[in-house]
Image (cartoon, rainbow, N blue to C red; front, side, top):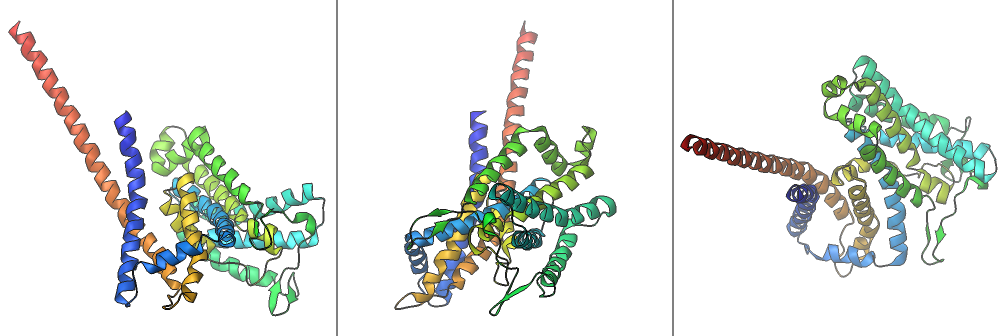
Length: 376
């Protein structure tokens, strides 16, 4: 049993490790092909990450990545590909911003209200894809992609000046939210910055994710339905119901992804609010193997590449384009798919050999016993 556990840990670590090594190697080849140093960009980014203000930016960005990646991972554990996290998160953020700008309650009521609005909005938007899948058999991939486009248009409509839009200079916003909905962070000084208060929400969500999936009957039913709908149905689990619930929960978590920034910093939704977070979360969830600890490390790595890469533009005497970090992120996703499949095949072969050896040993033992009985 102890040996099996070691092999399981090895298989879990091998995939991300191979993907990272392959991505670094391929990125270095790209740098060499362009006549640049294959090592200096990494040292420049690591040096940039030693500054306290950059570390704060990395932590803040990682908290948003982490929440969004948990939403993606929830779908993956159910064998669902929720590509609509980006639309769910942005629509949740804009609805939260609108409610926060027009309703003023005491903080102990305002903050839970805003979080509830974000979760309900995300769950509703993801639930549309869930209902289409269980009632009409529509692929959640197609449905969520279409819903992303619809969400973008809906957000544009809501931000018209005739609706909830407020023009601030050249930027279109939803107006500043009431201060009772602001969540203070951890102020580390004027030169360092402030860690979002909702960073702790990401930690709590990660713990809940692990407990629910690994220590509850609901989590077992969800994983069983994702592994085999027919087997789950044979054990009394309604697979369609689990699909819908999984999409609703995934959407609810998606709706929370923008709140660290919205409630902790900008306090309004505007044209400059980050997009593409949901697509980044897919790569992070894959790299983290849908495990809360692995996702945390992957989120920090992605945030590091985002926030440390600007140092490449200012490098002297040779400047490096910060798009190198984007290339590396893309290569990581590409390498993840290949490395995980290679590790899976290798692990399957190891398991087959071990089972074969155990069966051969058992057969040899039985033959020896038969010979002893015959000799008597």
